Amino acid sequence: MAAQNGKDLLIKLDMTGAGQFETIAGLRATRISFNTESVDVTSLESSGGWRELLGGAGVKSASISGSGVFKDENTDERARQIFFDGEVPNFQVIIPDFGTVEGAFQLTSIEYAGSHNGEATYELSMSSAGELTFTAV
Image (cartoon, rainbow, N blue to C red; front, top):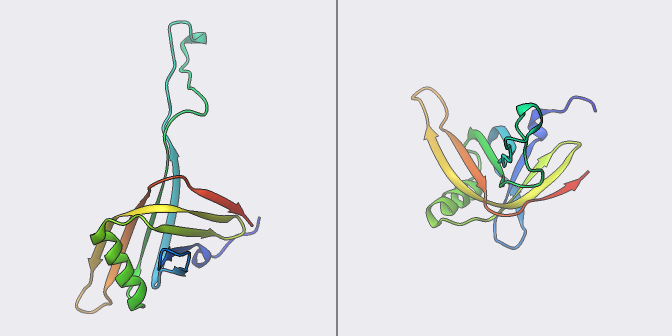
């Protein structure tokens, strides 16, 4: 696979709850990570004293983060609404030449910053709130 542009990793938000996804405007940096907890089943009979893990067990999760500048009133307002209302809407993450991850996420953090000689910026963090689907390119 050839190198990809970082700007092509997109975070899209369901604006209406009806599958109307829009890219969160102004993002400059985005990140998605997938995690799973391990379940240790090591016992005194484990070969050579090595740790053993139970395959297919454990809680799976994903987290999304992004940072950028204010560019679009609609997506900024929707993100604030989600946070203050405690909603868990669907998001899509477009991973270039890989596929699309979609599912419910809770907005766990919004940070705003700015300096007197620069633009206002924001950072978002989200945690998965249910099963995610993956659609390959």
